[in-house]
Image 1: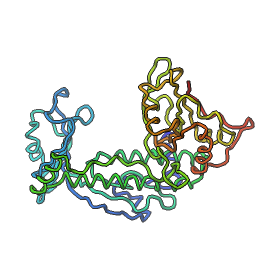
Image 2 (image 1 turned 90 degrees about the vertical axis):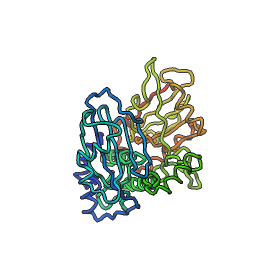
Image 3 (image 1 turned 120 degrees about the vertical axis):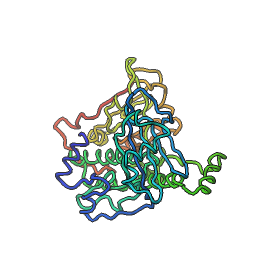
Image 4 (image 1 turned 45 degrees about the horizontal axis):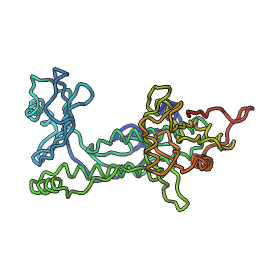
Length: 388
């Protein structure tokens, strides 16, 4: 079911708070907000050149860590626009900074008024924060209503999309009658921890970028140029929620990672994996079909999820792993098959396809699936297959 239809359907049952940073739904539900410690005003300028083929003399994307004024720049915003973001300094007002003559003076080193036009010049407050609670009764928060971060990692919109995907497949199962409302409990459990980690890293980077003291800036620059600055940590994976764990409770690699998105081919035609499958739940295995030992109950789980089974052969066939992207990903993690969620996060990886049936039993329980509503003919035929 398309996400917009899920949103509309749920809005008739409760309140989906995806209504921005000043969320009316969040405030009406009495959900509290935690400030995570970053607050800065920045001027955002979108410029469109008269000649779309002209190139502004600056990097494709970059950050000027100048204590006199930190600046972010992006040479291509879509096909037509260039963007600059400039930090306001003490004593500067939003009204003055957004005046066209002031904006052109700030852009003078790159472009002139005769070169193009200003599409937008507005001051935004970059903030960081997260709702202490994302669900209450029939209210659920997502996007900026649930969390805010400064843009230094470029993860604000990305995090909102992750919320939408994570919430969307859960609502699809609930509203279709396949799962109980208990499934929504894992939404906040997964997303809040993940996005809070992303916010903390964006804030840490922002504090490095926004240094305006010349002495501190010189120390920062020296550490970066000498290679002694702290390494940038790997992007966080999911650590909570609907993920397979070992018997000791530890997350089982590669659960919580994003699955690889490579090309596969059929009859000489190459396509992205998700274009071939159409998205949704899928099991991708190497050389051996992962569904060969499924009992009826496990097929019912797969059917309720609309799960696809994809087998990629070593020597080509109906579907081949172009460039061996999937094979290399799984080999590095010591697995031969992956159970992948509709939001592309991995529920589990297995070292042998004989482990798949038990994992489907676990998955059905974790998803709070209801008993299958069967036709007289038995299990439904929603399960589909792509294999050599």
